[in-house]
Amino acid sequence: MKIRPLEPGDVETLVDDLWFPLAREMGDLDEFNRVADDVREDAIGYHERALTDEERILLVAVEDGEFVGFVYAKRERAMPTFQRTYDLHVIEVYVREASRQQGIASELLAAVESWENARECEWASLVVHVDNHAAQSLYEDHGFDVKRKFFAKRLE
Image 1 (tube, rainbow, N blue to C red):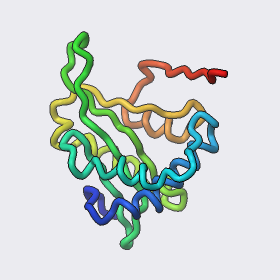
Image 2 (cartoon, rainbow, N blue to C red):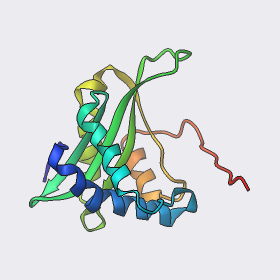
Image 3 (tube, rainbow, N blue to C red):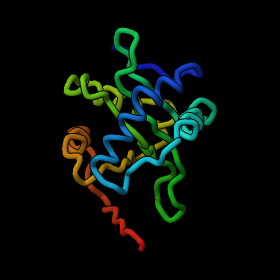
């Protein structure tokens, strides 16, 4: 298995083979995460930003020529009220179901933490669904602690 940066010709494959399965799994966890119809072009554009924005990185895990996982992260300036300057925010981490429990997500997280722009970051953060216990366990194994809780309410 090899981890490498996303390349321009990779985006559609990433979206079709990995992002849509991620989106479906998140939608199955909670209606809050349901994906709208006809979002493929938007998803492609969203992930293409990693190719041109120096503050973003998208790494793919490739095994036998196929994408088996990815991590998408960005370096962002912390609020001016905080002592820290930059945070590394992990936007998405996903490993296809058939490739899980093989250490791929761990390798993806380690790779994004060693990204050159992450060197200026004091903290890494991410958001995980309350019912995604496997991901929570992974993140705890990587030293992540709960710092905040995210609440959502449907407005009628």
